[in-house]
Amino acid sequence: MHTVIEPKILYFGSSVVLISTINEDGTPNLAPMSSAWWLNQSCMLGLSSKSQTVQNLIREHECVLNLPSIDLIPAVDRLTLLTGRNPVPESKAMRGYQHEADKFGIAGLTRLPSQIVRAPRVKECPVHMEAKFVKLHPFEEPSSLVAIEVRIEKVHIEDDLLMDANSNYVDPSKWNPMIMNFCEYFGLGEQLSTSKLAPVFGPANSVNR
Image 1 (cartoon, rainbow, N blue to C red):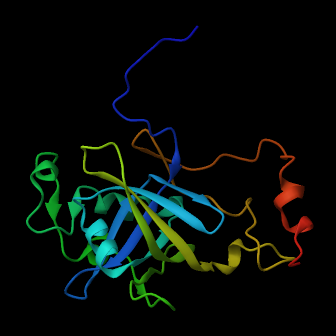
Image 2 (image 1 turned 180 degrees about the vertical axis):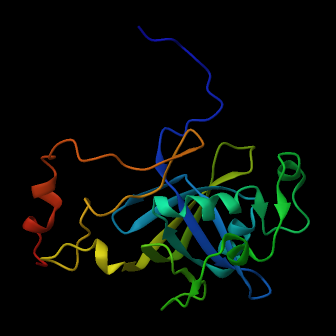
């Protein structure tokens, strides 16, 4: 039996992303989000146009997508309800957001220089993706929500996550991403079975072995 409901949110589960961008004054901004999905070398980011991150992306046309593992939950939680916008947009202030200029300092995270973008990477995250802005798509008008398309230009992976036999592949058994599931933090459980997609898209079928 199924019941028809009207949930306030539809966060059925997606990876938490720490987006680093550059503010207008040249300082770094860092913001957690969890409405992101990837297709080939592109990524779509669901954000509010009132956020500092969106304003920075529109102006600078670049960012870094840092993927935290579950051990960084305390750091990510310290960034919750903080914004780089000053003054704080009224809609965010009503939900308890406060302005914070030093997001890296508040979170206790370390900046690493990127290779092709100005925004820094987050040292403690095992995955960094340097990305370039492609296009902004209005979403659910007349709300402030937008979908921002970015193209991944360079991927940095912590050595411990790589497959022993092929450095171009991440070993999924070693990667435990932080998942946002209906506004609560989760990790991954143990592998349940082998997928038929693994031999199709995995390293065994790659021409770049």
